[in-house]
Length: 57
Image 1: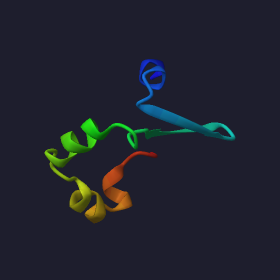
Image 2: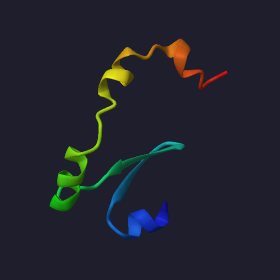
Image 3: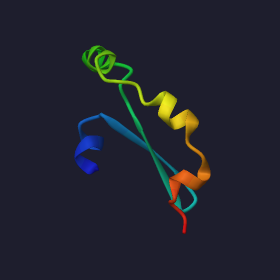
Image 4: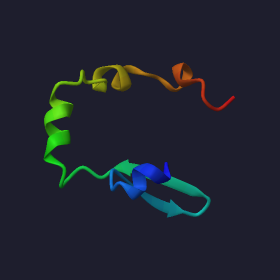
């Protein structure tokens, strides 16, 4: 992850014991063009239920 942070692609926010990462693409117009060609996963995520996630057993 440190390579992405050093490259300016990822930013982090620490809140207590948690670290939240997000993309830092506002000033990288070439990534906006790339993302236009990637398929959206929004519909799949919107239809997921907590039971399907199976992350916290």
